[in-house]
Amino acid sequence: MQCACPAAADLIYLMDMEKECRVRSVEETWAAAAQFASELAPGDVVCLEGDLGAGKTTFTQGVGKALGVKRAVTSPTFCLVVEHPSERCLLVHMDLYRLRTPEDVLAIGWEDYLARGAVLFVEWSDRAGDLIPPMARHVKFAFGDAEDERILTFS
Image (cartoon, rainbow, N blue to C red; front, top):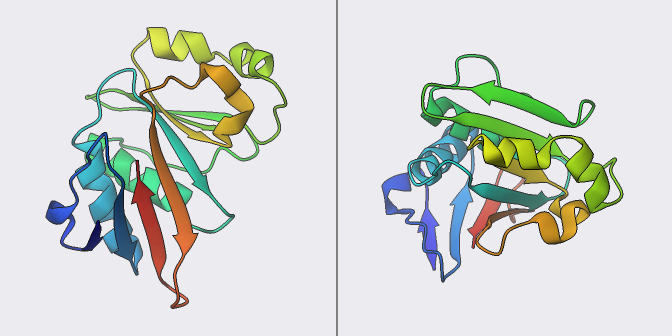
């Protein structure tokens, strides 16, 4: 399945199917992110997968904007976890690259965030192992054929 953003209204998240969206700008990425954000619920875990510069933080910025986060959404690369409160929920952006085991992930407050109903956006989610719930959502980011094109795959 494929959609061409910015007609992000066409982007419908289906839990049992993959959905692909091609974007060519920050604005198109944010439009896709806003549609995705409309279906988030407290306690959701979203695994972000993709190379450096593929759009994970840009997408998370769009989600934050859609959720009403007031301050800038930045990459958690050097601090592991960044909290972004909003009126709708607590958006928590995690970068687990520097962690090695699920025990390390627990040590940075994983269970506490879930107990508080936070929505977790997780980069390098493989480091969390079995802590990732079976119903976690996955967004894969890949470079497209054009220099500015990104392919987002939702599953």
